[in-house]
Length: 106
Image 1 (cartoon, rainbow, N blue to C red):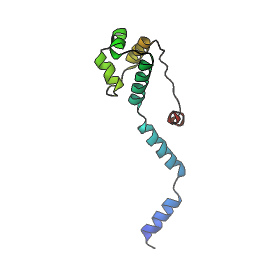
Image 2: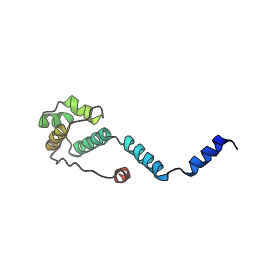
Image 3: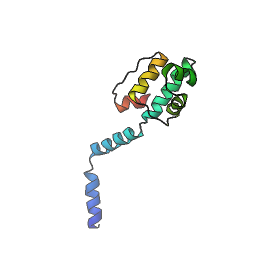
Image 4: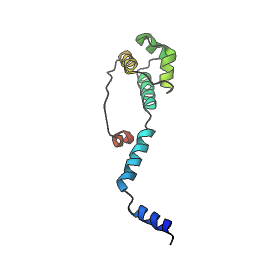
């Protein structure tokens, strides 16, 4: 057996299982798409309330084109814009920190 193969065998034997878990957690984190979540939520609530983008624009003062961009995931709104959208939808903006495992179950 070569010295290199011996080295690899030892390295694999000593592989830190927690390091692999940390890498998996990181991959889950970078796969999380907040713009997509916001866009899906906005579309869902707006349609549930039977409000058009134009009507929401009139209620909030946010241009309809910007609402469309948010709904299409092309624009990530600021907290102020999110608050205005929520007010226009008659909703309260809630920000929370949850574990990735909880978020992935949804």
